[in-house]
Image (tube, rainbow, N blue to C red; front, side, top):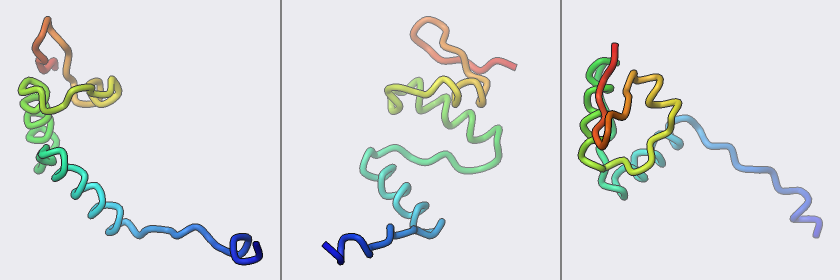
Length: 77
C-alpha cells in the first residue's frame, strides 16, 4: 500500500503529447492539417466533405468559419 501512496502521476512533455497525437491521427488514417490558417481550414473542410471526420466539434467549425449546408460543409466569411 505504501508504494501505491507514494507514486506520482507521470507528466508528459509537449513533444511526447504531439507524438501521441500524431500516432492517433495515423491510426485513424486522417492527415493532420498543415500550413497557415487559411490552408488548414480548407484542408479541414475537405476532410469534412470526404467524411473522414464523422462528428466535428461545433467550436472547431465556428473557429474555422464552416457551416453545414444540407449534407455538405461550406466556408463562410
